[in-house]
Structure formats: structure tokens, C-alpha cells
Length: 219
Image (cartoon, rainbow, N blue to C red; front, top):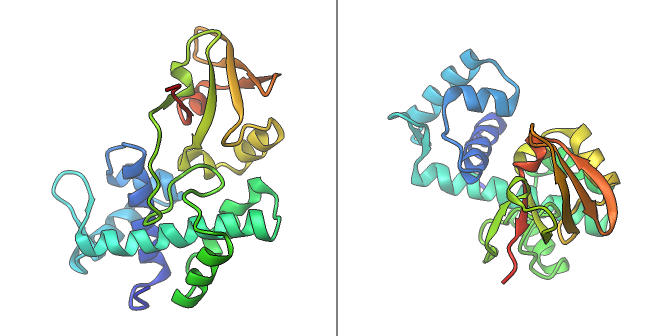
């Protein structure tokens, strides 16, 4: 990774990458919400990033080629760290996102290569999000909120946005709502909250989460 860029630059390009990945327009207010910082701080930072050639600010905020390269490295190492922490070090699944935020800025090229090797080339993080450069080919997916009553599908991916909520991740962990879990929609209330069965057990899912949990469509 190019060490000329500070940790703060890396946090911002990572956030922009992840927001784009969710299909959300990247504007300053959204970055502020994503990172939990003031809009004034975002305004100052993105203008500095534009001056460094990492983003463009015409309408939406977009990563330049250099910005995309930096973001891909940061996101790749974050998601590799998540897998390493959960699979090799056996850290509780719900805790690995926060720990990986620390690891992602300290992993060297050699350590990254060793992590790839010991985990036999993983394609996604433990939450189902693709590792940049791993060659992941996603199945067709839809939000859990769009499931029909009685439909049974496999959970494929948990949005990075939900990963920012530690309490939500603990709930998903306790409910066994992890990638590959079999999900059946039992009922949906008028406000979008769901009652589902996860591997046969009943679980409640709020409307916000239901829009950010993605199930793989049957072939």
C-alpha cells in the first residue's frame, strides 16, 4: 500500500468504495453518516482528497483511478483480516469488523500474501462481501425485504452498512443469520418488518435490516 496516504485518507476511500458498492449516491452527507463524523469534516477532507487526485467532486463524489486503487487495497485487506480473525484466530464473528478496521492499515504486502495462502484464496469476507481482486462471481440476489411469503432462499450477503452497527451484528450472530443460512419468509407486517425462519427457527427482522440482507435467488 502507498504509505504516503494517511489512515484518514484510507478510511475515506474505503467508505466511498463501500457506499458505491451498496448502490447509494455518494454525497458528503452520506459519507458523514457512514463514518460518524461532521459534515464540515467531510467537506474539508474530500476537498483535500480532490487536490491529491483521489476523488472528483462533480455532482456525486467519485474515486479517480488512483483513488480506486487505494480503496481496493484497503477494502481487500480489511475483508481478508475479517476472515483471518474469524476463521484462523476464531474471534467471535460479530466482532471481526471492528478489529479489521485496525488491521487493514498495518498489513504489509508479504503478510497479505501469507493470509491469502493460509486461507486458500477466499472470495468473500465472513459476511459475504466480495474481496477485491479475488475473482468472486456473485449469484443473482435480492434484498430479503423482497421475498414472498413462504419463499425459501439462502442468505448470501450482509451489507457493510449493517456491519457498522455492532448491536445489529450481535443480533444476527445470535440468530444464526450468517451467509449460507437457509431463510424462509413467514410474514411481513405493514411497516416492512419480517418474521422469518432461519434454519427452521423463528426470527424477527426489522425493515431497515431486511433491505440490507441479501438472499441468493434460486437457479
